[in-house]
Amino acid sequence: MLPSVAKTILPSIPSAKKLYNVVITSDRTMDEFLAEVKRTFEAPLQLSALLDISAKLKAQYKQRLLESDAPCMLPSYNHTLPTGEERGTYLALDVGGSTFRVALVELKGKDLGEKGMEIVKMVSYKIDNSITALKGRLFFDWMAEKIEQTLAEPEVQSHRGSKVLPMGLAWSFPVEQTSPRSGKLKRMGKGFGADHGCVDIDLCELIMDSCRKRNLQVTLDAIVNDGTATLLSRAYRDPATRLALILGTGTNAAIHLPVTALSQEKFGQRPQSWHDEATHVLVNTEMSMFGKGIHKVSKWDDDLNEHHQKKDYQPFEHLISGRYLGEIVRLIVVEAVADAGLFEGRLPDGMDIPYNFYTDLMAQLEADETPSLSKSMYALQKAHPLPASHPYTRTDVVYLRQICQLVSQRAAAYLASGVHALWSLRLDEEGLSPDAEDHVTIGCNGSVIEKYPGFRERAQAYLDELCVRSGGRRGGIVLEIAIESAIYGAAVAVCALEGQDAGVDGKVG
Ligand code: BGC
Image (tube, rainbow, N blue to C red):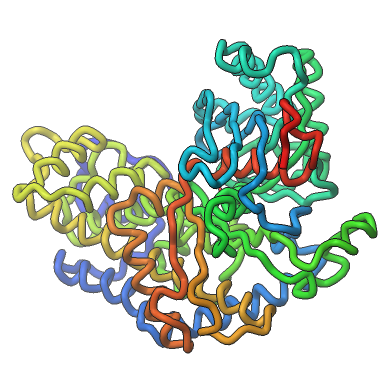
C-alpha cells in the first residue's frame, strides 16, 4: 500500500516526491508530463502491435486449454447452447463484485421476444467492504440470510407456493466444476475474503450448508461463472452467440469450443455419458489471468501490481477493468501533482488513498459535454475537494480528462485484442476460415462495457480493424449488450442442466 500523506495542501513539491514510490527522475512541465503519458499509453496501440498481442494471447490461451492444473480455461458442464425454448421459474443468484442479487426469474420462450425472460422480483444487496472482508463460511451465511429475506417477499411467496425452489448461481469468480451443480471454490479476486480456508471446498455445499442452517426450502441445481451465464442468456435470444464478455469491476470471457480443443485431463472426472453427448463445451476462460509479459505496461501499472494483495494474479484485469482504471489514473495524477505541478502542486483530498479515485468519476469526466466542464468540476470537487482558495480550473479538468481518455482508450484496445484472440482461437479449433460466418455475437455485460461513455464503440472499432486485417469481415464480431445476463443466465443454466423436473411448475422445455 502507498503510505498515506497529509490530505490537504502538500508543504512543497520536493517533499511530496518523497512520499510516493513512483520513480521521479526530473521536474517537467505539465505539457511534457502529459506528452510522456500519451506516448506511453498510445505506443502499444498500433494495429500491428495489437495483432501481435492477439497472436501471443492466442498461443497462451491454447497452452492453458491443455494444462489441467491451470486456474483458467475451465470447462463448464454445459455442452449445448440453449434453444430459447426452455421454460420454467427459478431463483437466480448473482454474486458480483459489489452486489449480491437474488431474483425470481421466469423463462417463457424466445418467441415472446423481450418478454421471453422475465424478472418477477429482484432484490439487490450491496456488498460493501464489511461484506467482502467476511472470511470463509461467514460470507455464505450472509448469502443465506439474504436469500431468506428475498424468499419472504410477497411476489416470491405467491409464485412458489410450498414447493422447493430450484436455484441457479452466477458466480463472478473462478470455480472448477465437478458436476453441473458443484465445483471447487478457487482463489477469489476483487478483495474478497470468502475463499479464506475454503479453497477447493465444494461451493454448492458451502452455500447449501448455510441455507440448511436457516431451513430454507431451496436446492442449488446449477453453478456457472458469470461469463458463462452471459453466454447462455444471450444465446437464448440470439443463435449467433458464441462468446461472452464481462467488463465491470472485473473482466472475463466465456467461449463455445469443440471439446477437442481441451486436453482430456481438463475435464476432470465426468461420467462417460457426458463425454458421449458433448461435442462442444462452454469454457470459462478467466481471461483476466492472461497477458503477463505480453501487454506493454507502464510504470504506473507496475506500481499497481507491486502493491496488489494478489500480485500478478490477474494482469489483464489490472489493465482494463473498472476496479483498476481509476487507480491507474490516480497513480498518474499523484505523480503529475508532485512532478509537474498539476493543481499547483496540491493533491486533492482523498487522492492519496489507494483505490479512492473511482472509474465512475472518470466516466463522468469523459461524458461531460458542458462547454465550461462545470459538471466535471462539480463532481471532482465533491469527490476530491481542493481548498476554496484554489478550486479546480477548466484547464485542470481538461488535463485530467485527457489522462482518463488515454487510460480508457488503451483499455478498449487491449480488450479488443483479447477478444480478437478468442475469436481467432475458435476459428482454428472449428477449422473455419475468418470469413466463413456472417458474424459472431459476443454477449456483453458489466458496468464498463455497458455504461462507460464511448467504451464499447471504441472497442468495436478496434475489433473491426483487427478482424479485417486478419481476413474477416468488418462487423464479423459484434459486441452486443446482454442486459441482466448473469441473472437470466443462472436461470437458463438450471433449466438447461436439470431437464424435465427442474422447473417449479414442471413445464420445462
Ligand atoms: C473473476 C471471474 C469473473 C470476472 C467478471 C474476475 O475477476 O476471476 O471469475 O467472471 O471477474 O466478474
